[in-house]
Image 1 (tube, rainbow, N blue to C red):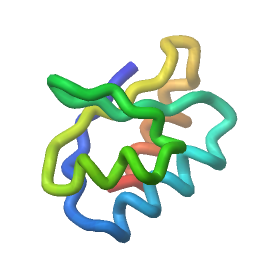
Image 2 (tube, one colour):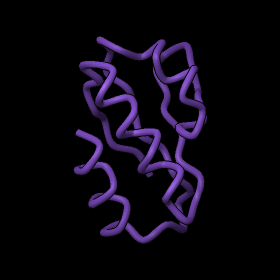
Image 3 (cartoon, rainbow, N blue to C red):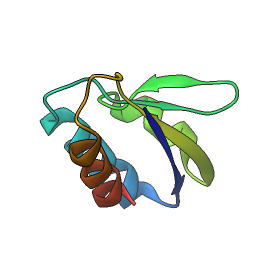
Image 4 (cartoon, helix red, strand yellow):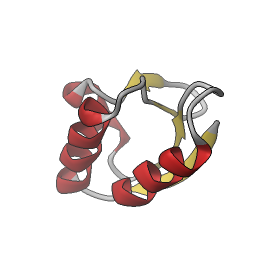
Length: 73
């Protein structure tokens, strides 16, 4: 399950990290060349100014995942 978001600034990175840490499942962010654990704050800073796919396992509730992603934007 994936959705694309545009990562604009440091405050958004911190919010993504906080939400990923609170999620009861693993959340990853990927670009064409990177795949990062969203719980890794340091890695997320490399994505500022880029579009990234938010990725979760297929067995995650789609509505729950959509709500998570909308909070990250």
